[in-house]
Image (cartoon, rainbow, N blue to C red; front, side, top):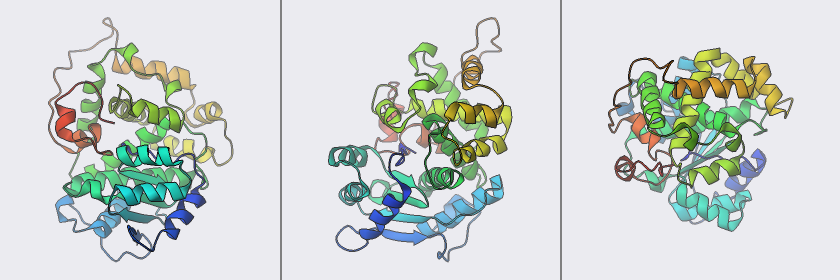
Length: 324
C-alpha cells in the first residue's frame, strides 16, 4: 500500500537496497530485520504478535500456508520518523520535493526484497493494522520477485489490488479479517459513487498516475476499486493466473499482451465485465444490496488510511474519498 502503500516503482531495485544499506549508521538509522535471520516464530492469532520480528515471521508463513507462495528473502527497515524516512527516499534517488510529499502521505514503501516503514506513523496502531500493512508490502516485494527483480510495466491498479487481496487473505488466516466482508465493504463504497465518477483502468496504469489519484478527490476509493477489481479477476480466473501475470513481465514489457496471455481475455473486456458487476443495470440487478455497516475492522483500516497518515476518524466521517 498506500499507504496508501504506494511503492517505489520508478527506481531500480538495487538502488533502493544500496541506498538503504548506506544509511545504516548515523542519526535516524533504521532498525533492520531480515527474513533470513529472524528467530521469532509465526503465531496463530494477531493478538499474540509481540514485535516486528514476530509480525514478519507470521506474514511470511501465512503467505506460504494460505496461498502457496514460496518464501523469498526480504529485509524490513524501520525508520523512527518522517525525517529519516524522507532522507532514505532521497538517497534512493527521489527528487527532494517528491521525497517530501511521499514521506508526508505514505507510511510504507517496498521494492525488490526490501520494505521500508515509517514506524513513527504506527506508534498507536494495533498489530492487526501493522500486520496488514506488512503483508501488503510483502505482496509488492513478491511482485518484484515474480518479475525477475524488476517492477516492469504491469498495471498499477492490478499491483495495488493484488497487494490488498493478499493482505486480506493473510489476516483472514489469522481470523482477523474476512475476504467476503472486505469485498462487501469495497463494493458498498464503490456503489455509493456514480460509475462515471471513478477513473477507468487506463488512468491507473503508472505509478505517477496512481500517486496523482491518491492525492485527488478519489482518495482511498481507488484502493477499493483496485481491490474489488482484482478480487473479481481472481474469482473469474484464479490466483494462479494472477501470479502468472506478474511472471510474464520478466520476459516482456507488453502489458496488454501479458494480460491477455495470463487471463485469456482482453483488458477492455474484463473492465466492462467488472464495471457491470459493480454497477449492474436496472434490468440485470439482483436484490438490493442494503447498507454496508461501517466498523473499525481490518478492512476499514485498509479502506480509510491504513497505508497513510490520514486518521480513520477523519475518513469515517466523510464520504469524499480523501483517505488514500
